[in-house]
Length: 136
Image (cartoon, rainbow, N blue to C red; front, side, top):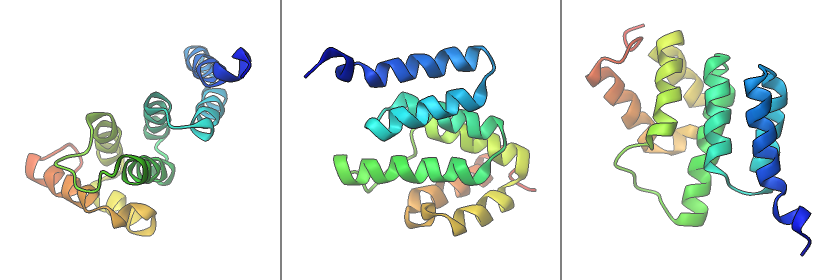
């Protein structure tokens, strides 16, 4: 195996970080997507979620969440969660603050996320904890 193949994912992560620092968000998105296509990288998925939450792209953020949860279910065998990881919850909270909980729930019903009960439980916890935008 050549060394160039071994480090390809790391190089794309570095390209994504540099692109974000230069405010080239589309380039960063492409770089992180390439990392995710090569194999699972929590950092790449986290950055993609942050990019989509900042851009207010609800559908893309929910697809990212479903892809991560699919990976956890298939590879690690995790189906039952106490709570979502904080790096997944935080972008969801940002989206709720911008769009309101009703809009996010409506979008979640159309995406693959609805098969994961933890997402619905997270929405219920947002109401209970009165996250900014929960009543909109």
